[in-house]
Length: 285
Image (tube, rainbow, N blue to C red; front, side):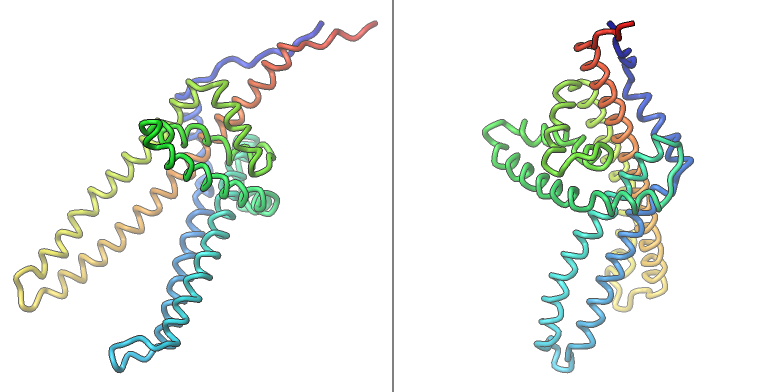
């Protein structure tokens, strides 16, 4: 009888290192989230401008038209933000999958993925919300373990939707199957990726805090604070904030690459192990 060879184990270090090498050759992976951020910001500005134009501030109060515009605009903004988030997520995961397959990608790969998996990803987002609420309810009974387990148990859900072609709810079953089967490498990878995100966020925040303190001190105790100093610090703060967002978007691309790479490898290994456990008889003749 014949068997399918099981691929050798892979280390978390290998996945993380390969993901970084792939990202350095494919910075376009940052584009979906970056474009989504620009689109949402533009929408907020448009809604604010329309509300101001519809308002009457002569009396220092907002008109009914402005209030109505804000209310409708807020609902529209929420729906658009959700749709943009789903499209950007699908695009990033689709592009990451293409990178692992052929070593390169483009926005075209992302848009094809977004069109094909939009509905399933929307369902997966609902699943995430439901499981997050359940984890919060179980926070005290499980002494916090439910909240700690949540990111690990669900870590392969989105890769399963985009790379594996699973439905939105079925993807959580696939994620649980892989996590339960390869808990060690999954937990280590998840904790490292989350830790990296916190370290990067903390480092960026520490860099911005002195600028904010400088703006506060520029006008402290002065009847006429230096507008030049405040203006310069405001521009510096704006630029620093934009740089921070780009770095966070870049990390999200790296996180997605690492997650998709690990998912693809574990799924292939599970399939090979299952095939090896149930070998087919060799063909006659």
